[in-house]
Length: 436
Image (cartoon, rainbow, N blue to C red):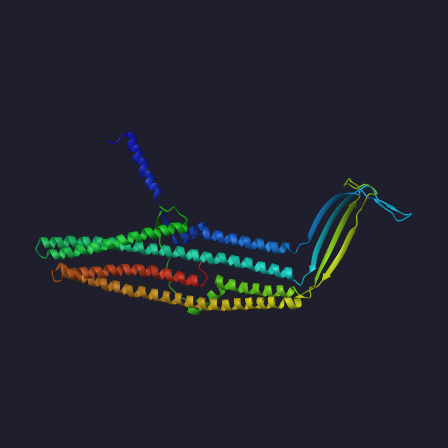
């Protein structure tokens, strides 16, 4: 008999086990929001945006004036301080001090637009980085949707298993009663028991799959690994489908990867202009201030210092770029052409992807209609075989086969419904509007 403390310990242990295996019901939209909020991939993508913004700000900084300030003190010892030029000799002091301060500011007034092109290019790369985030969001969202629907398929199949186990148990009970009355053989009872065993084996496989999918979904959503996820229902499936061309047009306009290649084409154009700018003349303005003091004391005293101020403009032209830059410019043109070709290839791939997704969705919807018809047929066949068996005009084999066909048709229908929903989301993803 357990002591009072033993009961307390058992209660705490039971509570901790229950707490460690929490259950959480989620709608699809709640799962998507949770996954996006906790995604490590999106956090990494955001850091790439921050890096691109930093590079853009650095490009803007390069257009600002540059300046520098320096100060130098020196002392000269002059042991031999006499220069003899006959009657007129030069006598220098034994030592001398010098303080030299310089302040300089320079501003590039014209450089062929090179700084402007640098800002344009980095601004475009910021937009490319933001589109990376949009693309990552779509990928993560679809991964969550895929696992959510996979879990739905398993849970629905488990419901069908439970329903069929209950039905088979009734058949076993009835067959056993018929056997006791001498109406059927022992083999008939064994057939129903074998059918039950097969359904139980399927249930074991389904439970193993459920645990794997549940774990994967917990990782995607950032939930504790021990959380048991239950589904709060699926969104209503789309009842109408637009013409294929509508989805193709939407994909070309909205897909982040197509937009990125368009922006990269603009970056390539900007790079061409930047290379051309190297051939232009450059104009810069400078201003300088000097402080020259011959005293050891660095602070100015009357008669010991001078402060020259300088202003100037520099016009320069590196004309050798007329023949040294032509290959750089040719390379920039090649890179631009490659980007355009890649965009055209990507558009073709997107069209193929959208068309495949569209046809798969239509096929999934048609499959549901056909399976619904097969359910009706299997249900009627099962009813007839059940009636025949109860009236001792049908065999146990026919009864078991009819039940198996209905059982399989029920599972196939639930899976087909989930596949149709997933196919629809895949179609929306292919158009680039999954998170719009």
